Image (tube, rainbow over all chains, first blue to last red):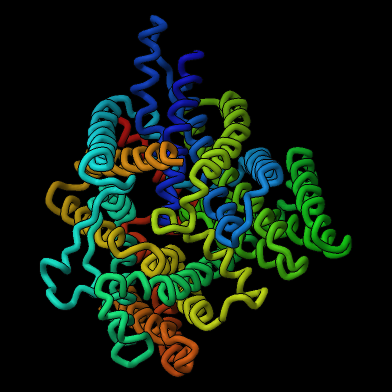
Length: 536
Length: 84
């Protein structure tokens, strides 16, 4: 049905705009098919009525596939490409689109020979998504709660922006002014952000990790440092601005270090799964669906590198990126299948480090990391979709056309949206934590950034994440990077999740609260994106 | 005390010390190496305890653990039941 195609494109664009902004603001990315599938059944039902026939599970799957593929394109783009802006360069548009597009297509095509992995491992999100796609009985209720959350969040954010508040982000309450007279430097500012509340809710205990980490930075390390004379005592006299000075000068660097350390530890943990697929690597690589986009990946990185460095360095860095890409795609497939987690950031750090150390140039290094990130994001989604569709009884052949189609549109739109909001990147509205991490790493390698804060954070992040749950390191690092005004509502959201699970039960939590809080995230993300776009 | 509780506790203490040790600016001596070493040792012990118990941790935290092949059918069965 043409209606399903149009609706899925529109929904994909809404999700992409909203969740790109959310990812830039908080460092937390929401992709995957389950989010898109939330309203799939309802949309297909309504469109079916227009056409005078019933919607099918195949339509519902196609809707989810197209919209989720468009949305998930932001994950590879947002974590890497903004690094250009943070280092003070412009985004090289044609190179960026080309590289991200090749990565996205490689991600989809390379999974076509990994059906065995899809069958062998559980891919929990894929199983979850298939129940959402097929679960018509509860789909109406889930969509209802989602739309309530979406509308409340969108309208509240827009109303506050248009009336009492002159900025595009929700207003903040300065609790320290009310509660802590004379100690205004203690950061108890809370943003009235339903998005932050939703992020805390959906990430569960991870949100509490961010809250604890934020408290360690601002309520322990900062006062201790001021007492010990590490930081100027004038910071306290400057009241509320102390937290911004501490964040800019210290916390953000340590936080970025933790992020980098946890990313690398995550990639190493994922490599331990490589042996489970190492026997397949030859047959996988000899498929034209793999070696043609791999060759294009090699060419794209080599052509970009040749503009900045010698032929030898360009060829060497391109070969190493392609080898890393092959290992990363295979091992991250098993990692996703077994643990529902993808080591995307870790592999993009490794790609950036490889290319930067060889070519000494930032542009090919960031593009190589964008290539790897896009390929892993796209491949992970394809595997999840394949699992979901096979469990829903939809032939994977039927959805591959939709998958390819949207894997081409998604990256182009993701970069276009990034360009629209480029002026905000690097500000407190859009700190882009992961991309900042890549920019800091290049600063460290080129000697423009001191290693101390980064090194300490890196070691802490790497050791924390080696416990087998790399996300703990990521969420700890965010405690130093995003403002306390966002961290506090994230923590409140996490507590709400625990309370709701305990008081109202798991069924209520999954079927009602989760869609409602997801609606909060997407509603505010879209409102802020539109506000930023209008101001641009 | 379960191994994962002890492991989480050690990692939490390690993070606390590690953040403080990392926050000293270079003009005041930079990284506090001895504190950082203590932090990393605590976290390494915590990692060891958690890694062997991560299945329990992930379940406790509401996440999915690495799942063995024979459990896939069971999970798929559960998804059928949910739908029903």
